[in-house]
Amino acid sequence: MKKSVSLGIAVIALVLLAALVVLPVSGVDTPTNAASTVYPVSSGVTGVKPFVSATVSSSTPTVGDPVTISGIATGGNLASGVQIWVFAGNYVNVTTEPVNADGTFSKTYPTTGLPPATYYVYVQSPSTDGKFDIDLYDAAKYSGQVVNTRTKATIFNFTGTGSVQDAAASKALSDALNLPGQDDVYTKLTFQLTAPVATHAASTTAKSPLPVEITAGALVISGCCAAIFMRKTH
Image 1 (spheres, rainbow, N blue to C red):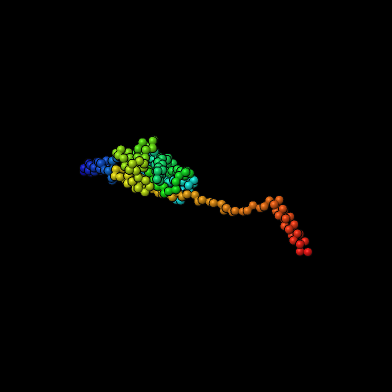
Image 2 (image 1 turned 60 degrees about the horizontal axis):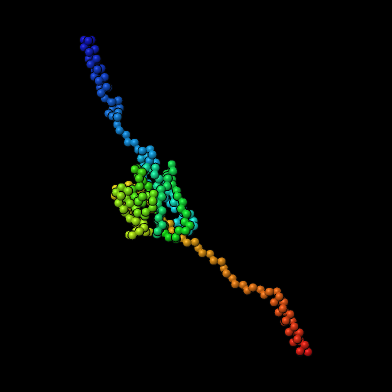
């Protein structure tokens, strides 16, 4: 009888031990080699969707006053910095500016000699590939030709036959940056460069006083005439 009880207890113990071995401790079967998503560390702010914003130091600067474009870019691969487009009429300036560790960027433009006009500003930030999908053809040598760097197709020209300027160029660039398949983000703004106010000094015409000699002579002559007149009257 004792042997039967001992045998039963032993069987129960073996069943419980087997259950503990098979079942996970937490009650959930968690794989030990699950893959984890790793975002590139060199992309500025990791795991954040690309975003860019910008402001201009003055919306109505005067010719000769410097204009500063500054802002913040986050997400994406910012190793190449941001690309800033500034254009009006025949003036086109496209440069890349580095992005600081805190996401800020800034560039100052001299305006001396520039014509008064509405200037259009675009700040373009690349996505995770770190490449600008819309750019000038051969960025090292200005051509005025805007191309899709993925397809190598010409989109529009700032100069030459069939070129577009000002508001038309702004729309063309905006449309290009919104093309399907390109992943750059951008923001746009404008500033009105005004002519300096002309200051004319008040001009007054003053008659030069007569020389002392002429004045004294006139007094002598007047005195003589008066003396002669008085003698005649007496």
